Picture 1 (tube, rainbow, N blue to C red):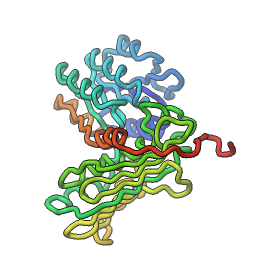
Picture 2 (cartoon, one colour):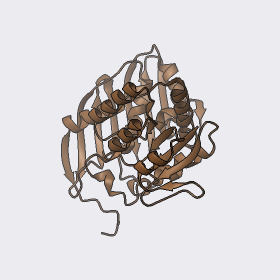
Picture 3 (tube, rainbow, N blue to C red):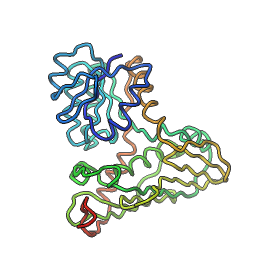
Length: 307
């Protein structure tokens, strides 16, 4: 099947394009970007031109920032094409609900992707936790924004979500593996004085689960989830790619290389079945944090560390 990739930025170059190059289901038939292209692939600077000129393209994968994504996704669905959404699927919950309704009315596929759910240890963790009682848990998700989003001011603008851009990956795993749902009880956000979205967040959920998100960590990055249960301790490390139960290794993969290929396999399955997959539970926790949290003003953030 032929697919177009809209938004040729860091995540597209690092993950989407290699995944598509290896895919048995999809051919990268075109790109849409104002500033970038992929060698050997027809490039368009405007989505409407792509949709008008390439009726052979069945689906569009949208990898631009979340704030403008609704208009792009709506146009894709209006043109009778299937749509795949990079995480987070939109800037607001309501707009993604609207897209889901529109896809259903059109009989098209809408896939709100959560790449961290495809990490190697996640399915095994979910299966092991089934039927058990989670007594407490701790999420530590700390990384360096300068490495992962170099110079990308949109992450600190309204709709960019700040530290929840990576933090929502942890929440996508948590909502996938827990045997019973939890809700946010309290939150605290650290917002740089010159920015609109948080650079760090501390969350407390029902069921004794806490989360520590921080975008200021240098050196080794931390993506860990630890859950204490009535049957032992479960630890998911490396963003869900390493799984240990009571200290015994169950799954171990030190890279994130399998996550995006698995997303495109899932997209192909959904398109062939004419079904959608739109789970917004991770985004609900972010929205709740934005509403419930106490905000702390912290020192300004600059991309140039010498300032």
